[in-house]
Image 1 (cartoon, rainbow, N blue to C red):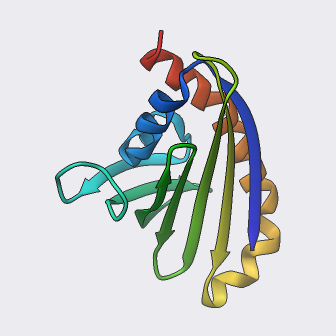
Image 2: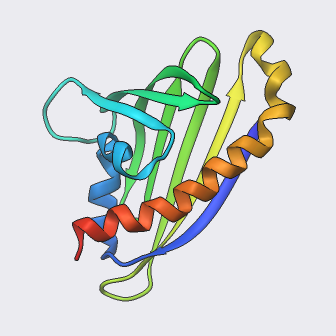
Image 3: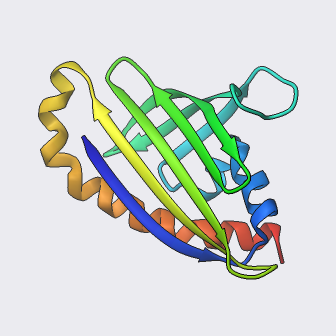
Length: 146
């Protein structure tokens, strides 16, 4: 299993940041690996909502279906899966002031089948992607909360 974690300070109120990030289709704006992220179904976003996420990793595109597994005032958990991998994205939020929130983003990736053999060789690439996300996410959010 590969686990990466980053903490960033974001210029956005806690409730606004959680509302923005709970719609996983916004991953196109803040996740440098996401090529497309489309909601499956309609209605309000809530626990059980699903998205089809297409990501580019090491020059190849892969698709996972993500589901909002848990939503609390200060925490979001998404679970994604396809035939070769399962992932959990756990976001924890702490209000530092009315307009600033600390976000700790923890992504866990577990490969299935023969893909598990590649796991040790991909760690550095996932660390690089996590660093890029930590840089890009606050910029994307600042466009929403000027």
